[in-house]
Image (tube, rainbow, N blue to C red; front, side):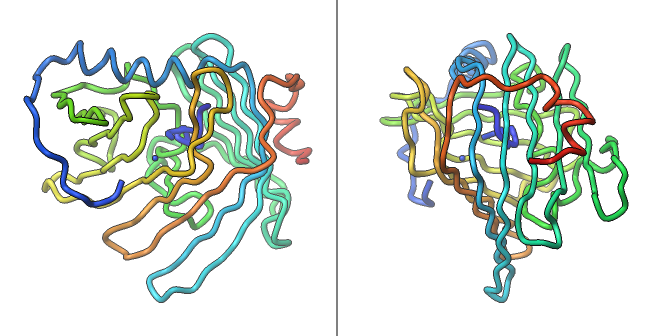
Length: 255
């Protein structure tokens, strides 16, 4: 699946990992990350209900409900999210289309009746007030990264990579579970080498043969001391989804 990426994408506790030999082999690190991506692309489609809970630094929460549709066609991916509750965001839609190695993102705001294209200068903005940015919700294509090193531990691979096109992060580290090739944690760092965000995945389930996906993800903003949790339910894999869903018509039409 491709959640934010991200949304698909896609994902440890702070316990210390016993250090193993560090392998500075970009191709080997890329091959492991590619296996993660290949497994996520192994399904043709997925629909689900998503619950988002945003918690600020004073412990106050806001909840939102969404319907999502995802479709994979080879290396191309389309995803649509429509907010269904509460009333002040109902009908808001987010469409992300990755085609020919290029990603286009559009946001529909029913209150103003227009579709906004998310430009490169807005990819670091918060998505609907959450701790996910539009960049976080984009497709995690291995070709977008320069891989630096790989460490193999008892249960995980630890991979460090840079994303030259990112204005938010100088580098990221991925914790990938060796048994299932699922992303468990992503650590995000700024230019000063300070970790500024962390994405944790949990409650994994095998939604298709060989594809283990989390039913819950939490993005922590370490600078603002806040977090956003997203949980998935009523998942349906490889069902038929009409092509119009991933167009401006589908974005405006909603659920």
